[in-house]
Image 1 (cartoon, rainbow, N blue to C red):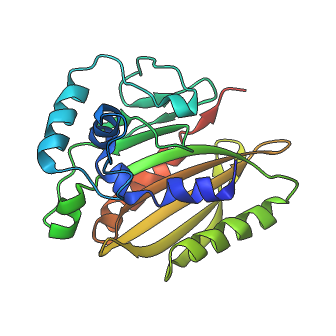
Image 2 (image 1 turned 120 degrees about the vertical axis):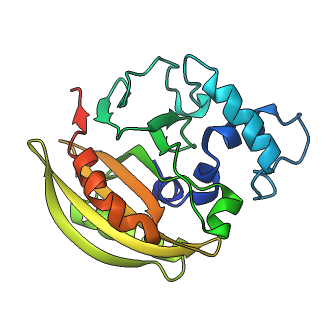
Amino acid sequence: MNKKIIIAVVVCFVVVAVGAGFYLFIKKTPSGAESPEALNQAPDQESLAENEDIMENQNVQEISADNNQPAVEQPQNKLVTDDFSIDLPDGWRQAPPVVGATAMAVNANETSSDPAVQKINFKTYVAVSHDTLEGKTIDEYLQNLKSELQRVIEGAVFTKEHDIAIGDKSAHAMEAEMVQQGINFKVLMVVMAEEGEDVWVISFNTTQSNWDGYVAMFYDTVNTFRLKK
């Protein structure tokens, strides 16, 4: 997978902001029409509310065909795919992943008093993506990931990096701050390399004002990530 796709997953604030509602709105757009995605705009709130109601009434979450993930009923408070599982905090729910992500979940009940956040209906989210080293060492991969993020998001700053353990596996955690859509965001990216070329990137995205309330939860959640092979 191209690193630009991973970066897109990490910083897809507008797309994930409206979550499943945005996905369904795009799917319902008539062929040939200029969709909000094509115009780089979020759909209006009436459309979002309608589509969120649709999602609430679905017994099985719909998964984007671009990611080739089966539409399977998920256990409560857990994301499960053929490759991994990860526990979710209370109140979080699975959302159709954007292109490039394997799975995604949002804090569906989150609210904000910030008008800019309300405008795009942003919800704190977690995304899990698969990538390959493409012949690089893990250190080269991490540096490339950081450089690409800073190239795409001007002013993005990495504020903390450290090695962590996820179960019996080693991983590297990176915290970054950036501004998009007039909103100050903070991101936790955790990169875990398997044997061979496979890499998993787990990203948690929230606003800087909510960071302190989420950071411990983010690290607790990433520690539940388990590969099935």
